[in-house]
Length: 323
Image (cartoon, rainbow, N blue to C red; front, side, top):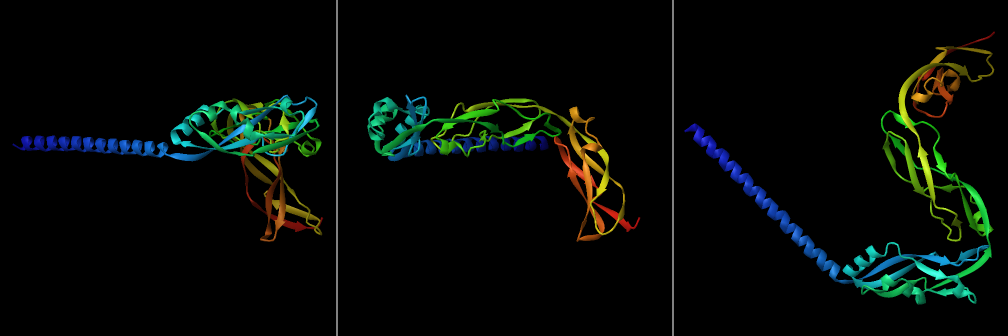
């Protein structure tokens, strides 16, 4: 009888669980249907949307720099349903407004409103263009100047635990030729790579990255890509004893300290483990107001390519005496 009651209770619990799962599944289905109807309602209404399209100038004289008063982008305000806007947005990710400068030999002003038909896909799909900004674009030519500047890689790199940089980061090319009016390029000393997130790496990386776009639309890059090679190796802990140098404390002639050496602990790549010794560091003892009876140790010089450098002790005793 007892077994029968236990079996009945277990059966009842299982049936209850199945009912709860069915009800929960039905609840989620209802939410999904309601969400779909809400999306359909929102996208079915007419709204105003903004679309920004880059301008590409063709047939620019080779020995001339093109100066554009406004941005090299044109913004459209369009009206239409969300469905048509969404379709247009997906289809037109690579659209550009192409302007042939041969058509403007006798003028230095471009009427962008007349150029909207150059973007065929945007004028279709039942989207009505109601505004163009800027409406007109003024330009002129100046003598073209070029300059070669080094490429700078400033992205932060996060290595996996006990891994780090093996050699200096290499880039190809390591410089880029920029061109434009002299007044716009003369102050540019280098060019940065577009920042990227590089995390949790434990092996060599060969990346193709983009250069930062020019903030000044009149400055052009000869190329906008760079290959970045990051060599990675495993790091291990190393400890070495380094003699402590005493910073001059006039007018006293002689200072004795204890201990006379400091212990440095750091992580170093396996390839550099044997080559880094005490001569690569310089530790100095300096006097501070907060600890008048002791000297504080500071690392005055350390080699590159090491991580988590720590020193012990932080303070040393000293004795002043005459020779």
